[in-house]
Picture 1 (tube, rainbow, N blue to C red):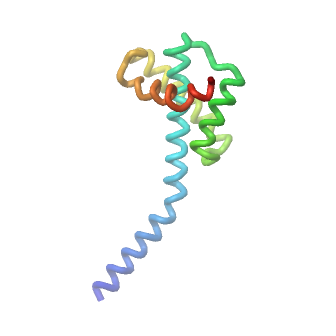
Picture 2 (cartoon, rainbow, N blue to C red):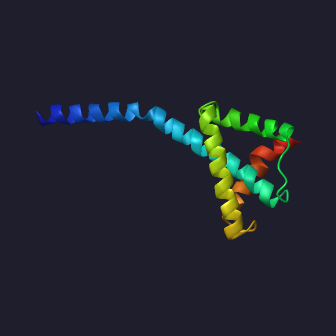
Picture 3 (cartoon, one colour):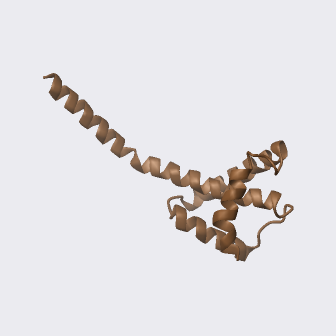
Length: 119
């Protein structure tokens, strides 16, 4: 009888975990999306002397982001996440400066994934 209960509990946990896969996928897509936009903001603040990217440049970088994230982040949510990335990166630059180890991963992501799209 204990084995039957153990199997039932295990089956229930597997089903419950399976029900959360879409939420986990959404969270991963959103984290990746924010990471890319943090990289863009780091580049604006640290590599471009606060000069924004123009529309063609944004379109090219957007294609890279969409290829990686897919369309797992809805249009309405994207704006919220972009604003979050802007705010966080502005605060990081002000607090730590562009030479900080805390900004290095963001700039590395920009150089590795986004900058080639601008060439």
